[in-house]
Image 1 (cartoon, rainbow, N blue to C red):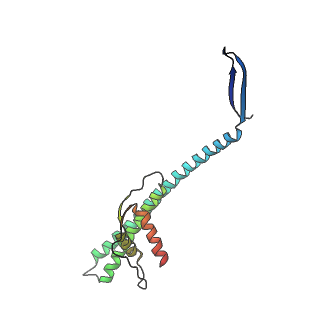
Image 2 (spheres, helix red, strand yellow):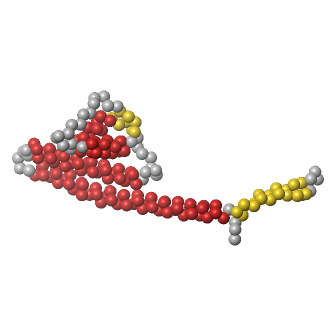
Image 3 (cartoon, helix red, strand yellow):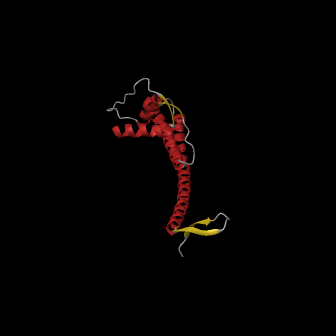
Length: 175
């Protein structure tokens, strides 16, 4: 059975008697099929997004626990070491903790990405100079490379995480 859309207009005389009419019929079968397909796809995408968010939440939880353990272990090594640790060892332990903090932020960013479009991204003032210094520190740029950050870098109103990712990718790719 074909579905039809119907438009009728009656023609009336001065005494309001129907003297004729015009009717136009359109086959809307394909339009109905497309609407059903569209609703089905929307439902699939909604389920898929919910699954992605659940996966990201579970992954973030499962990744944060070992990261916290690594940070704690580095602190315990410093606390339990007899006497004063050599400066290079202290620097390495501090580097471990900063890398753990970076990984925790990346895990949080993964979770935010999974929620993208459903939650508002937090925007605020970002000091691009300080952000670049953080990125360079966390990338542990090899000594044969030099990264120069000019003084007076702007403070801009934006979401920090995506900008940090851009800088990390640009500098990392350059290295």
